[in-house]
Image (cartoon, rainbow, N blue to C red):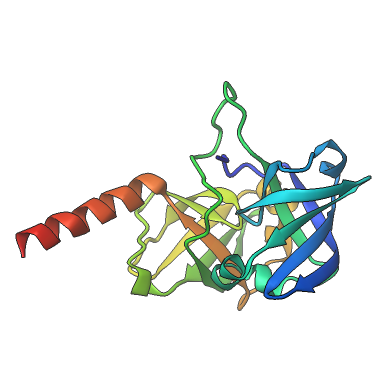
Length: 200
């Protein structure tokens, strides 16, 4: 379980493809503190640490994870948002994030507004995922508040601190991001589906 509050940015130093899986080597300030079998969110995707060597750690993404996330586009030199799992007793500064990406979205607009930035994203409505105004959304692992919620698009406002300390500072129009929709909202939507099916 995570909070969507990014700890550090890591840089991809190597990629190794084995079958349909990819092992990523990531250099970061928190890598020396990690241990094998630890769960770490990479752009919001929960992955298990399989090796630690100095300031670099390795994680492996299976094909299903690659297909559902933007990790399949990652190249050597790219940056990723990193967050270690939540410790019991810690304050929950973001929102409850599982590290299970629901789908990707494409950035369709980036506007600077007097020191803050507004990003707009568009996603497929085929999976029936929804946002609500002022609700929570995880974008590349960052806990954010939804504005301008529509059927298959929404916007978020990014403050300068978040802009500088996550990979939002180089996110461009046309790029794909990982989305994790609010877990409570997903349960309610699923319950409504079952309720409607039982009435038919």
